[in-house]
Length: 332
Image (cartoon, rainbow, N blue to C red):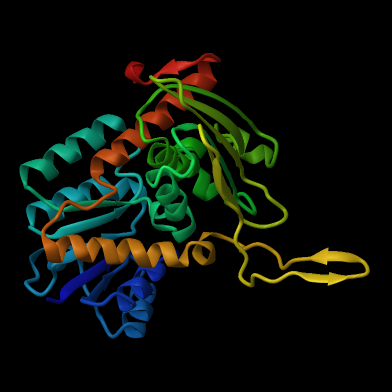
């Protein structure tokens, strides 16, 4: 079986997914959509696909699935349109910046019995998966504490900040999903602090660029998250899980894994410069998982419900910062 896929959005993440489709057995990129015709044409030409419109793709018999890489404010409407059209759907996070809109969208997906997978690519990173595998194999015993460090090399432009929904919905949301993935229990309370330490313009827009979050489950398991929009040394992505019998960690990755030793000391190459290169394998693996779910008629993960739960934690973090207190997830 060949799964014919259309990519909606020809920006940087659309390009990443187009390459992932080419690398996936049983998948074929047939169409590209973008508001900017030049971008759509360039991506379509590179992958021997056609340029089309959203409405045409919804009705196209040769399109089995869509990958939504458009701006966030279009996600929920597009998910509903393609759910009604009977297409399998992969959508970048989040479904929407509003919890209520997200819930109504997921209701439509359920009513249409549609396939929906959310783009939490870090679950598919081989290093993070190896951490989860060590937990599942009981190599570190019962999980007790998780530490997640996630820092960008630099802050995005103000134009992006204005539409992003803020650091918790845009950046930390990946870490909220990873926390759930590693803890193995649902989070019940959230305590967050946030500051503007990198760029005053971000503060003027009502957002933060530096944040710390502590998540707690009902049994007392804890997860700490450290976020910054400025890591001068590269794209900083680390996790550690401490358990009753030991610990397991995934360290930063580099494009070249070497170390040079001289009389001056030890030197290693710099870190990856951003998510497109750091998570190349993860992007390919998640698209392969999406195609597998379609081919084998199984529910894909992460699901729309996973997206809703991560967004709920983001809302709880915002409330915690505003009210300077620990917030129960059941308050959201």
